[in-house]
Image 1 (tube, rainbow, N blue to C red):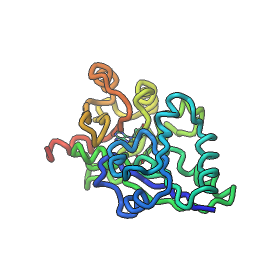
Image 2: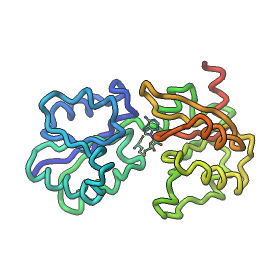
Image 3: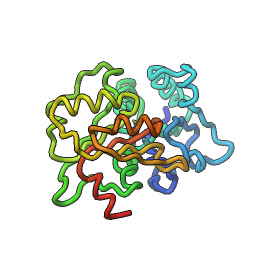
Image 4: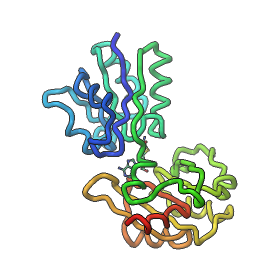
Length: 241
Ligand code: SAH
């Protein structure tokens, strides 16, 4: 039986990969990649067996169950199976579920943390998530919950945080997310930044307020993947540009 490595590929810049992730990419017998690993694919040596789950998933060839099962199958054939996941494996993206699936089937596995887009993408556009006197906490939520039907977000609590709110997977559902925050008491003047395609040539930021960000993002045709930052730290950007 081989071992499965759930490896964080970072936010897209190959230089933001950990040394361990880089070593495992070189040593792997087979690598499973998804759409979020972008530039990191360049580090994969030629001739390596690569399975592109992202493209296949778009064509609905791979469900999450199929990915889980595939990892188990590959671990019985190969010594080192690397599952490269965008950002950090345990920040959304079902890394935790994949780990539990492997554990339950007795497959040896290891998680290699990565730099999450939740922190790195705002940083790449001059937004520090915490700042003395402005924000002393960060909360990361999924903006996708409608589709996942998890009703797990306590919007009343989230809307009244004093700190920074980071929303991943929130673009498709932006109007609903904004609505929930406003309805539960976040100020309409709260600064909001939406940063799309971080660490790629197409990277871009739009800035507004909770009151107008839906309009601004629609006008600018913001597309996923994007990181949404809600909070006064968005204004710190002006000091750093
Ligand atoms: N595990 C990943 C997140 C997976 S959820 C991590 O730690 O970064 C996928 C979401 O992450 C996307 O919908 C988007 O909100 C965000 N994301 C990931 N990479 C991104 C990038 N390069 N630019 C902007 N957003 C990104």
